[in-house]
Length: 613
Image (cartoon, rainbow, N blue to C red; front, side, top):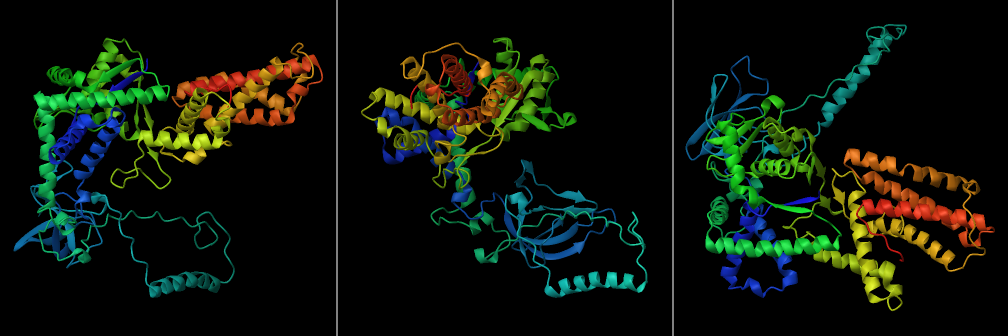
């Protein structure tokens, strides 16, 4: 059963509708005036703009929430003998006439530097920063490392030339000292005084993380200033943090309005939801994708919350700070929040109820979740909770991860304008394929045949290109490579199939030198023919292997190699010029077997073959 799961509610929907509503109000715009074919893409543009508006990096060069600049006044060793060697007691000037002491395990800072500081009362990794006893020293706040702010550490300075010379001199002295001892010692395993033994490589010591130093070039730095204000790029905004919080509050208001059934919010949600679904259906039809059932997040919104509450009453789940969670630490899966303290559910909440529906209503024995690789931990946690709920099917739940599609230049970014929308991709592909494959048939074939060939070539280009990789790794999209006439591409394999069809048509049309006889496999004596037969014999075992691994990528390599074998054989074997009826029948049978195998393989990859190209 092929099922689709639409995330039709939640924060991402609220973001889009928040931006749409603001746009309509500011521009006095009627969204119904948008042409039907453009509505979904326009909506996608609204979402991209919403994400950009909520991204602090678009307002400041230093997009670090609630992080301030603190000046290092002094650094001393930790007084406790039990303290790790890298711990230091640092006195900071954190505001006008305001000092705090922090125990820091980082490196790369000195007295006089301004460092990134998380003050008391702020939030770090969803935990409120409070004063903490660090082996007898009260640490107030946190000095942050580059890595904790998502930044790359600056490289350590190279050693001075004098230090290098001293190292070389020391190394040179050792063999000289050995030479004074007279005869060379015999080699021994210990590598001691006898000399010649292998020296043990010293393990590279892992250094503590470097503390983030505020670049003085950014502007006038004062203790306690927010880094986001130091790096502000838009002077029209009074305060970056306040603006971002205001925008997020408005998004939250939109989400609440939807959840509470506000008439206008629900009407807008239903209208735009239909726009998106209509476009999805059109894309799926164009791609020859089939789904037997559609699930919607909104269908399990209320029931999933009730399920979590019931599981807590049964003792399957625990309460922590007002939230209902699953403590999975003993399974090395951490802590999974399923219901926030305000009663709001999360993705995991709905995934549990969705699984319950699949198990109980549809009697599903095995469930494969095709979701991107970044959700690996999420699904391990969900599957473990399902197991704790008593579902035997949980052991047969599989997360099939896939990587992201990226460009040769890197990840697509709505902020940088490098996202390729589907309609644009389809247009680019159609133009490219028409030029490379089909232009010469315009006016020769029926227009409908040209258009259908163009669509199937485009679909083959996308599907083969997407599947011809380890599915869990990122896929680099390069249109010219994916649609090439040679190499590991969908069109190349499709063309091999049409050659087999062409041979059969010519034989049926009487173009061969002789009539058809009987098939004699003993006539297939060349090494290429033997290789082809061996390759065909491996087809079904390979299919079973791909199914077992939930990874079809090996089929791409298989069908490419078979197509390559066939093209070599085709160039060196003149089927129509066969000298005897039995030879013609045998060669035609081999050609048809190759063609059928290629077609079956491509069909399994979701690719429809063409009878002519």
